[in-house]
Length: 164
Ligand SMILES: [Zn+2]
Image 1 (spheres, rainbow, N blue to C red):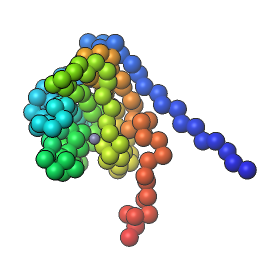
Image 2 (cartoon, rainbow, N blue to C red; image 1 turned 90 degrees about the vertical axis):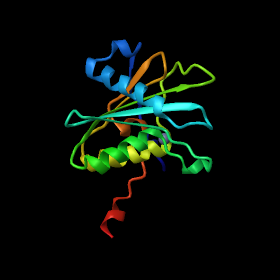
Image 3 (cartoon, rainbow, N blue to C red; image 1 turned 180 degrees about the vertical axis):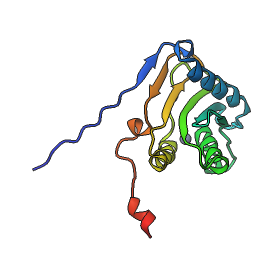
Image 4 (cartoon, rainbow, N blue to C red; image 1 turned 180 degrees about the horizontal axis):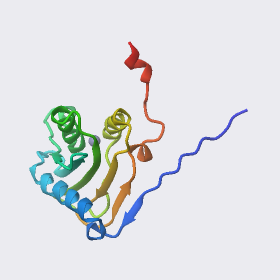
């Protein structure tokens, strides 16, 4: 005897960043701006992430690569680790993520990698409030997820580890 578990992903789709609410557009413009600070000599893929905190303050980060490839860090985790280092009491409300590339047009929404989804999920659990995600490319549509859980079903969530 077995049963099937299904998870439905629901995203809001906007035609472009011009269709976003003003505060979301502002956050995405900050993500686009910070993508210019990316250190990405290997991938030449420049990612920006901007976080709106519950205090309304905006934190931003870009990807930082390294010639020892795994030593680099994604823009999303640069930003969320900064936020949780310097604004430990603030809740993360929304994260805007975007990217551009040297060699091709990024004309579709950019989604965070699996490791970033796991890291963001834990902060979502910690703060007991969903983190909205706004995703786009250099041009094109915008996807909004109302929580990290929405794009990371069945996350690693071993709460027993905290009890040791
Ligand atoms: Zn990542």
